[in-house]
Length: 348
Image 1 (cartoon, rainbow, N blue to C red):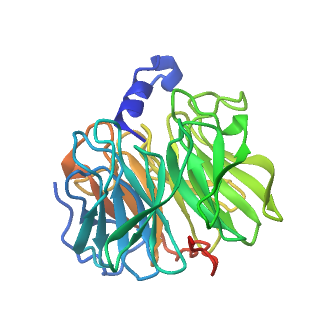
Image 2 (tube, rainbow, N blue to C red):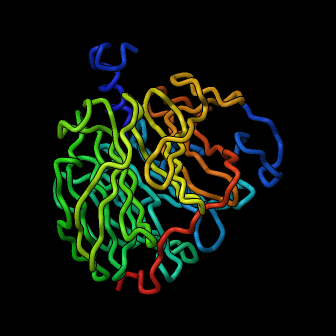
């Protein structure tokens, strides 16, 4: 999500909107109680961290989703303790346009899967050599956002600007895989997170705003899209968000619970059951982002498991506050499920 789009939401009529430093130096590896929040790492310039990816090499990777000037986007590498190890500048971006990079997933041979927005590219980054490679380009008008592998080693990519899911084959061929009015957003707030659940044989998908009439336009949703023999089936709503939540990235616990980061004005982490029943929100009070630390939730835009904690990327998309652009770690009292990664999930 860009700051420009979040600002446009703030410009909607008030009635439509509900009538609405530094953290403790405790080591990142110390035991955390449920509800504890600690700083994992600062995200240097150009800031605006996006999805947090915990890779198969046990390191943590973060991309910078937007930039306030002509700086190229970067991919940052951290240890599990939150120490910044290396970073790479993304090549070939259109710096005069909105530009960003999402570290969306990994490949079975250890590369990172990147989604670069200015040229609509699906890329890989070999972290051993630093080599970037473009494997596919989405059609004009697309804004690649999140991605998941599905059986058959195909990559499914969400489109933030259009109600479409794109399929990228191992050879880089791009096809429109699924389209629905349910995935059409309002004023540009579209489809965000996606993950395949092998046990349910479905895709979980977060939608920031809903424009198909099933809910108010300031509500978002969590959908379940059935997957049958590699093809999309019926889509159904598991959960409808509160107005201005803007559900974004999410993680799935071993219990089946789903932890959704709300990037909108409510600035909360929402916990849902596997069937979409809302269990709790943190913090309980919306709109403040207060989490018990001097750095509040400020556009929390992803939730990724590391041990029994959830890593939340704090993007500060509207305020652009560099002191808030960080990865926070939230104790949740359970470990997460590993993201689906087929053995043939490589690009030839």
